Image (tube, rainbow, N blue to C red; front, side, top):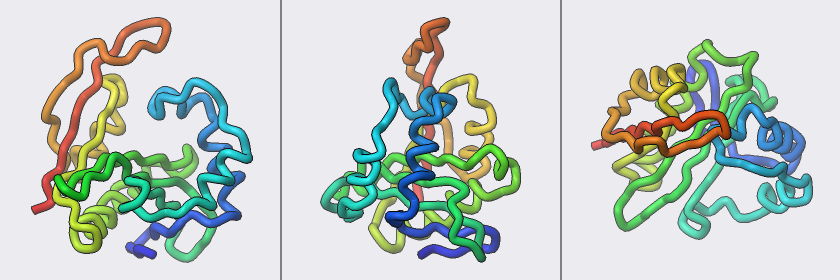
Amino acid sequence: MLKGNKIRLRAIEPWDVDKILEWENDYKNWRVSNTLVPFSKDLITQYVNSAQDIYAVKQVRFIITLVDELTPIGSLDIFDFSPRHQRAGVGILVEEGHRGKGYALEALSLLDEYALNVIGIRNLYCNILEDNKKSQQLFEKAGYVQVGRKIKWFNDHIDWYDELMYQKVLV
């Protein structure tokens, strides 16, 4: 468990299945998660019960909770982990009622320490759609730098959007 002043990051537990199912099947989150169909409870249960060994599955999910509670308020994912190149992608979700309170920024800070000192990641990256200004501000405040732009990369069936590429070098 990684503990900060306001929040902590903990491993996913079997009792998190319903909350993860709620987040994954909320169509408002599909735009940033690239999801097109709902997940079944059985599939989420299998995911939660699977090994969370980042070296084996190249990803790990942490549950974000308030520092003195177990109730999930969000999740933080490390994905596309490359031990050889010491890099990984980052994704974060904080529930609407808990946004704007500094929890996501603190979670990213805790992730930096874990990534560098525990699993040896030196580069973190994320991809953010051009119209997601709050996410851009969050990652910039966390020390990520925009390093690229994929032109007309995402189509929401109404319009095309550029995807911005952000990177943070930890050492």
